Amino acid sequence: MPKIVVCIFSFVMVFSFLGHAQTDEESVKAVINKMFTAMKNGDSKSLIECFADSAILQSVSEKDGKVSIKNEPVKDFADFVGTQAKGAADERISFDLVKIDAALAIAWTPYEFYYNGKFSHCGVDSYQLVRINGQWKIQYLIDTRRKEGCK
Image (cartoon, rainbow, N blue to C red; front, side, top):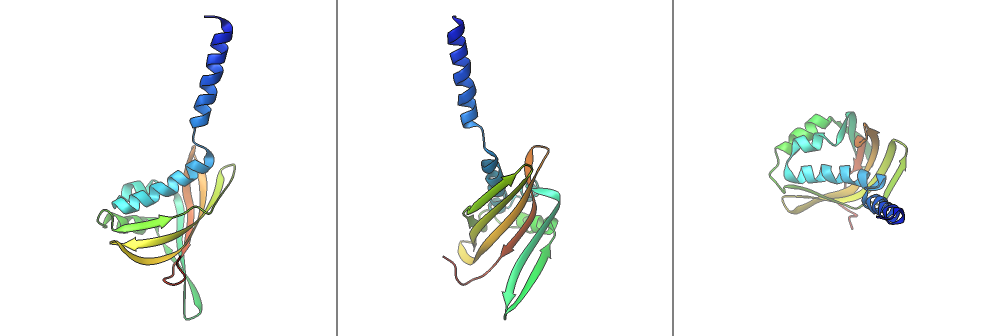
């Protein structure tokens, strides 16, 4: 086979592979989507895999004009997810923003949460992710929750 044909073939194969490689943004979205798939499937093991060992979970709520922040250990969240029937916990998100700098990423995802097929609440999830050993992990997740002003 002539050298030029081999070179062209190699060039096409390399760029074909690169065209199908997952981007950093897609990788960030993938770990977040994996977390929600785990929630929907009641799979606490897969859910835990999405988080860094030192991850922090918080929720912001407002009642009677007072803002409060609730902390929840990742293990407690995973244990709760593990008790849910498949399909019971269904959080539907959209990605408004993903930004990445080296091993740090942020994501902003408005959501609607359905429990056993019924609308429960909406809000926004804000993520800080860190690339650890080549994999994105959720380090910090804080969300808002409300029943009004959805959609």
